Image (cartoon, rainbow, N blue to C red):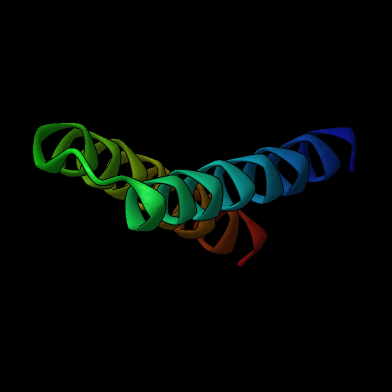
Length: 60
């Protein structure tokens, strides 16, 4: 159960990070910086997907 709580916390943290980066990108007027922030947000979103798959696989 401790591992499950840790993974759930990691998923929430990655979701918040991705949303924050997307918000920052949307506010950014510099095209290059916006692109970088969007790429970083996508990386965090992919981590959420990976962690979710890991969690679902190990709960079966």
